[in-house]
Amino acid sequence: MLERVKKLIEEVNSFNSTNVDEIETFRIKFLGSKGLLKELFAEFKNVPNEQKKEFGQTINTLKKLAEDKVSSLKETIENSKEEKGIYGDLTRPSELIDLGSRHPISIVKNKIIDVFNRIGFTISEGPEIEDDWHNFTALNLPEYHPARDMQDTFFINENLDTLLRTHTSSVQVRHMENNQPPIRTISPGRVFRNEDISARAHCIFHQVEGLYIDTDVSFADLKQTLLYFTKEMFGKSKIRLRPSYFPFTEPSAEVDIYWGLETETDYKITKGTGWLEIMGCGMVDPNVLKNCNIDPEKYSGYAFGMGIERIAMLLYQIPDIRMFYENDVRFLKQFKSVI
Ligand code: PHE
Image 1 (cartoon, rainbow, N blue to C red):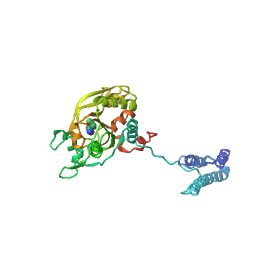
Image 2: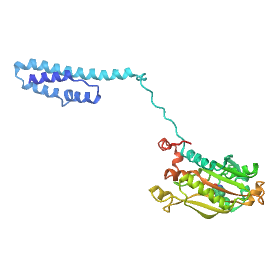
Image 3: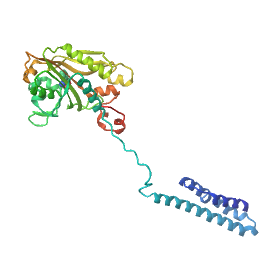
Image 4: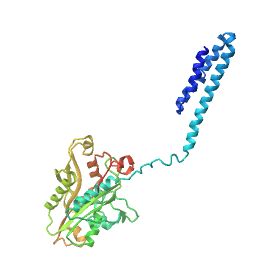
């Protein structure tokens, strides 16, 4: 019996740890309510009388040693924490600074700009708060024209003549007012429409619209430019043009690109058809040219407009447009770009 207690004393003496959990396990083993010391004290009554004195002293020693051990190890841990203090080790290497990355909308916008720059298009920009003339009237959408309803507008005054632009066609009007053909320009920018927010639509989004005006510009030129664009942008050139209506172009068409149905996201964003509408286009209506002081007898032109979000969703397989505006860094960090 005495031998066993002496072994335990050795065990206590040799125990060492800086781990809080290990120290606690040690404490429970020796000093806990069902621990070894409890057990040994209970044994006391069975010890022969002549040994009682020595046995009693030895287990008391064991108890004291175990208690001292626990408190000194705990103290060591506390002290080492204090030493580190708030500054920690001043010689350690610094933490890496997180570098920001370009927003996917900017990456795609820059890519579109790059594709059109290569065939001579310049960039034009204009205000996001527009007047009625540049957003609607000059574009062959006079007051009370039913097609105004196509673009759910955020008006910002009571006269309903100042608004958040619903498309960047307004920039093209400004450009035509200030420049004579030949005109080759694209206008990227933010636009606003009072639409219900869903996985496919948002009330704020981005567009790139293009305008080409010169003598003898034909629908064939438009089609060829679209083919060039889809090839450069997506590496695919299966497109289709569906007759459509825009007040500012005649004839008008909608451009679909065949993307395929390889992934689940493809299904989702193409509604299971494999085709995705990527832009509207058409030959600039002579009335629009007239409104902007360009002679429609002499000049003709084409125009097109696309949503950047839609193209980014296609390129990066993003299933929900809302992700662009949530600013979740885990989402944003995934996009790397050279432009
Ligand atoms: N402005 C149109 C829109 O926002 C797009 C478009 C531009 C269509 C040019 C035809 C020609 O929906």
